[in-house]
Image (tube, rainbow, N blue to C red):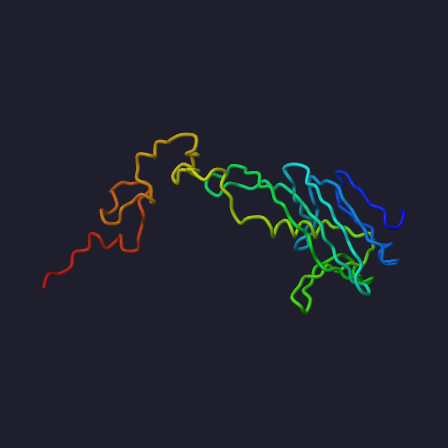
Length: 210
């Protein structure tokens, strides 16, 4: 490979960036391409993070002092998550700005992130042919929202039969859902959605009169 030249990858199983020239002569390194999934290890098990459409990435690594360097770039994956109310699949596009310190340690068997004294995360690696899969996967998972809705007005699922209420009412819609119970009026008897409380069993308890 010519020193300082770009390294371009299309639809690879694992995104790599070659840092040999950077380590020998402080030449900047570059890699770009698209990914439809990432394979990474978590808890001793191999995991697969699949994207709804090809995810472009663009990465530059610049030399700093000694064996330290800085990675910057962008990654734009689209995750498929479940709607928090009705469980329908929802495509969630992310625009991630990459930026992290790096340190070369020949003894490192696999790249990993550690926290520096400054509090910043450092990507430690031992193989100049650096596989960015684990780094991109962790960055993506941290950037993903905790929950999503397929529509702000999503009606969710019936709590009794699991019917998707966005497709229309079910036979249990005649019952009063928990969310609409008026505590001032009490809970309608026979409601399939009636809210249970620890005091329900005391309703019929007769106390002695003074």
